Image 1 (cartoon, rainbow, N blue to C red):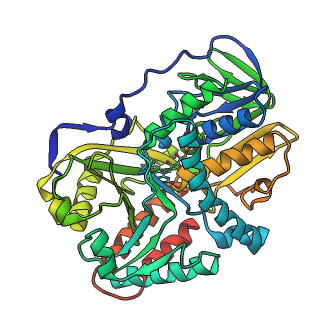
Image 2 (cartoon, rainbow, N blue to C red; image 1 turned 90 degrees about the vertical axis):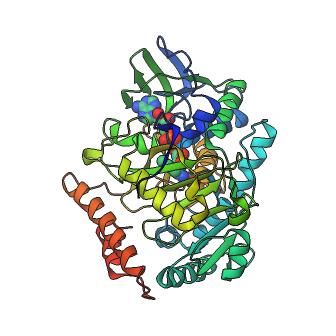
Length: 463
Ligand SMILES: Cc1cc2nc3c(=O)[nH]c(=O)nc-3n(C[C@H](O)[C@H](O)[C@H](O)COP(=O)(O)OP(=O)(O)OC[C@H]3O[C@@H](n4cnc5c(N)ncnc54)[C@H](O)[C@@H]3O)c2cc1C
């Protein structure tokens, strides 16, 4: 089934979120050499949160942020708008090297970070369509239902209480959101709906007010001890912090650090079928498929619906301003209408994609090498909307030499092995996604167990 496209359909042009507020006109690029205390490369949420907390902690610091396009151009202006308290990686892996207690503490910090983002948004007057409506995860096959129950058991073993996550009956779930074929669901209050670009642009405004110098249209071509080099000039600084996430593969010296993984979204026209769908509480919605989906009901009554799309381009090539393959648009539409048959009468108004950073062990990291003054944060594997806030606060503490509860969290200072060279990298990732699709198809036949194909896929890529 081909997706029906609205006459005003747009493919790419960064994202629908910018279509509704206007794609920003970038500010002046850096012109000339400057001296700073801290240079930050990349003005997504990570770079902006880091700049924000640095200036809050020490207003006298000279902080310069360098952004190759405009603030919020990357995943921060394109995501699904789940401000969720989920860990950016596996609790067990974090605990393996740093102990169970720090992993438990990390989880509580992630829950608290949801509220911290909401607090700052209120304090700084950032209206990002924020509603803390919680998160539903739905299962639509017996195998997904078994995984969902196992996930809740695992979450409980990592400190989630019944107030943090609970199982719902099908009736309870469909009374809130009427997902076709729902067999089971879980519910967590630790999630808020946001309009991602409004948060990014609001943060960019807030840091400027605090005195941060933000230069857009300023690509950094070299990051080295004490300097960030751009075509218009060099920023000399004691500390240079790399906050380039999915774009990191293009930064010299970091080609195989984090795999740039694509994620794609479509958005419908405003819908008039809400009586059939329900979904009146701005909850976020995800599922338990291997080829998973994520969705929100937007503030203007559309469904924004995302999934994996074409996951990875050979040689870690990066995105083309969000342009999305027709195959992906059609696949997302088919999935969306299988969740909500009532949407069939509507059309798709916008499709876009973005890149996120995936480390080899699928766990995020924050760090600062004191001997070189070089720092970094990222590799959130698609769970960065909240984690970037915690990363920004942590990087600010590290930069200022503060020993805090955050600087001992288990993602601090982790060194992860690099991805394999091509063609192994491409083959591995594509095999993983092919196997996930096959596994979902097998599980759709009603088998109660997770397909062995999915386990093989996880083994191949270390997921
Ligand atoms: C389609 C999609 C949906 C997602 N949905 C969710 C979700 O619902 N919830 C969730 O938690 N996470 C989600 N994510 C992930 C989340 O958006 C990211 O983890 C988060 O935004 C990362 O922020 P960042 O600042 O680290 O990276 P980015 O926002 O990508 O920012 C990096 C910035 O660095 C700039 N840059 C790169 N290289 C250079 C250079 N050489 N010089 C100067 N500037 C440079 C880029 O232009 C970019 O602006 C999604 C991601 C995508 C793509």
